[in-house]
Length: 289
Image 1 (cartoon, rainbow, N blue to C red):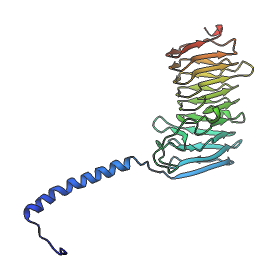
Image 2 (image 1 turned 45 degrees about the vertical axis):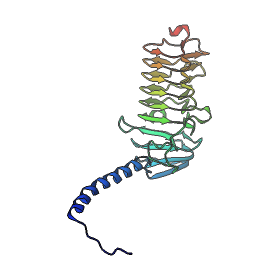
Image 3 (image 1 turned 180 degrees about the vertical axis):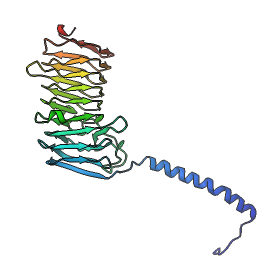
Image 4 (image 1 turned 90 degrees about the horizontal axis):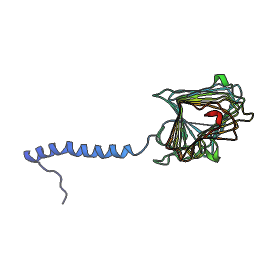
């Protein structure tokens, strides 16, 4: 039998009126809960090869570096505050020209893995996922960099270090890196080779290698490590044939040395540092005491 019409009593109508909002609320709550587990996907612009003209990356998009990318000599790449840059498997961003990365406390610039859905949404479209140490290579600054024009402030770097390279490697370029956050790498956090770079106010945490590795060639390079928090790495600071200034840092809970000078027989005094909770505190030349 097919029911063509029916009639509700007043009592049934009142019951239905009371029950519909509750049912709708339950449905909406379930829908919101489901949506919360699915990351949104921002508009994505892909990059690879060589940047050969002045370029700006907008914070309105996610920038996905799909293969090795070089900023050419004399060329400026400007990255707006709040921009998310994701890098693919083993990919390196090499700076031969100028990188202007001026983030802010509330809108940092983030370099991370293509699998990191915590920022910029599900860029690779594989459902909820997070990055892993060594997903991509790192940021490499060559000696052709225009040192005085580079800005690197309030920048976060995560999940790099593929091939045991530092997440940030600076080779004979004298730069200032301030208020940065370098964590969860498969190698060193920062690798500084033969230069006068200043690392100040940064957090270097949970890297499988050394937090900051300073290497020199002639022994007269004075990189400056000032006011940083260096924690949870294999070693906090390692120095080889260099004489950096190491002052006012908090160096804690690293798996081996807090500070380790190897192959360095003279260095300026190490002052104002808090070195606690490391497996071994410090191995220093006498001049550093």
